[in-house]
Length: 272
Image 1 (cartoon, one colour):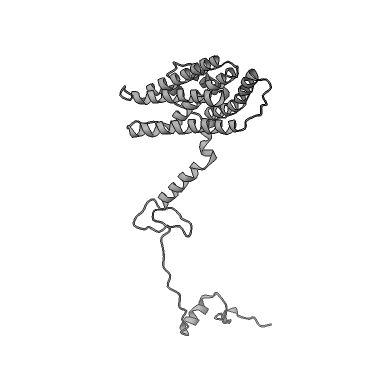
Image 2: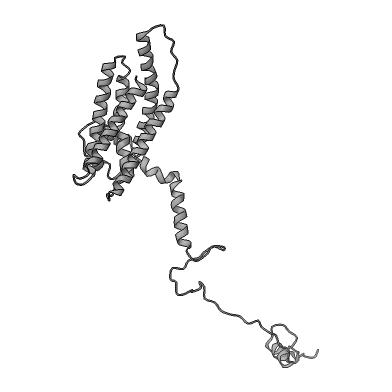
């Protein structure tokens, strides 16, 4: 068998071989390659070093401010934003309640400086609403039975509505009004601390409501005046220590008068 020389085999038809490519180039077959352009990623628009990836459909101009504003409004309606104000244990709440029962305690704002809470004011206000509604009806029953035992009596549900509107409205609106007043006068006030202080100041009315059930009008007035005076002194002294200087005495007197007015309102409306 004759020996076959492989060097004489044509190689131009083999794919990928250099001679084939050269042969096709010699035949004048030209392949047009689309023009390619190189781009730098990420694009450098005006040398902005703070560029970051944005999803499709988002605008590059002013997106950061709009996003921060949106997140801020979302935080207002998010429950997790208010969780730090309820992060207190029983010992802290009990200590603050004890401090509110001491009429000449003027260091309440210093005690809550690091952690003003809303748990105590919410719990105290809600408890006071139900105590006024329940014990107010009980006191009315005892007074009617004392004067005329044959008088028919029924539970007045409207006491709950009156108590809720009065207590919740007072503990929300009054601190808010003082906050705007202090801001208007150029003082740096904290709405959370004002809410906290006013909320704890109502605890003494929970205790006094049990004594107001006694069917003796003179005794009731003594109790409500004593409770109102103690609560008013607590609020006024703390407001005085919270406001620098002595030129805002009218603010302190207003806080004192409003607290006394609340005490008289409780006596007249729920324990007549």
